[in-house]
Length: 430
Image (cartoon, rainbow, N blue to C red; front, side, top):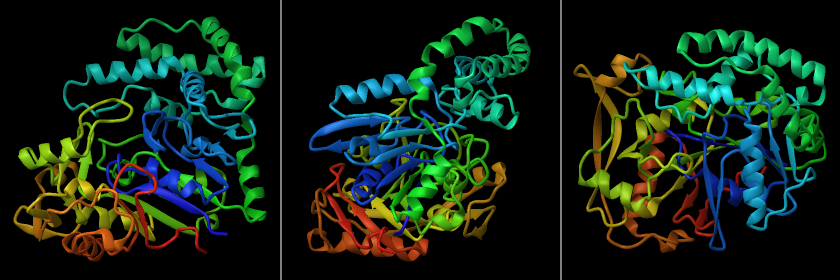
């Protein structure tokens, strides 16, 4: 059976939640492999809206195993609240339906405090962090001082890990003018939730490999988007983890041969939250129209998203770095009613043509988009479930996008409802 990785191929907010939910009906296991609760997925199922941040999208589907992999950083207090909120909507979550990798790093309160303190003092160039402690937690992971899920199971180990972390953090906090952390109080708070978290703990790498050998289908769910990747994104305005498809293997403990199909989620236009370069950003009525029609506000932060025309140059780039086999093109209906649509096909940098976004930040800022114009359509595409339901110019737009990014459309989404989807290629078809 084929295993599928779902990654955002822009700056996030591409509609991954709906697509993962749609695919989860065909999967046996849904695994999150990176990021934290700074990402948000909105699912609309039979009119019921579910907003997920830490939990995999598969939790709302009966009979599926949802997994939080070691590549994720996890705020245990947020997770407990999120589980309670989703249960209140009638969803059953038990250790049989949800597993957390034992080696998953924990986001602690001081991570968020550090995150917010840095952003507040960074008057030169704000990164645009959500302030939820994701970056500082990844720093501690690399610095070998993070507390992991398994550490909650032994008091002596927990005290040792907390002590090591606070040697670093209390010195750092003193420099920022923050009070020292009370080790005893922090340990007491962690012990108070230990049993609640440990009931879900499991050797996820082993469980996933057993499911593979049994022929089960695994759906690897990414958060954010490839342009926020710590290595291949618009650095430093990026997240603190690898977002591209290769992280699915290291973020869950399976080998790269476990990945059979990479599905890149791509919005029919472009959006971005927070700071950083955005070559096709629109500061006019067209940009406002895209934002209004697309309801472009962040699931996690509520921040208004910046909007612009589709950037084929960037998507072609992310399709290559993630090895995308096919894309799911979302929010096509938002383009309904435009007389003319523009697509970025390349850039000009200091008067010279360029077919990719350069790495250097100063060069990124100087890139200007080169546009190709396409005819729009007046008919509605909202709710379309077959090619026959689409206007001719909408089909032309989709086909031109395929040509420009060098990757076929596997799925087409025409509304937030999961059934309003046109399937071209089933990613699970081995």
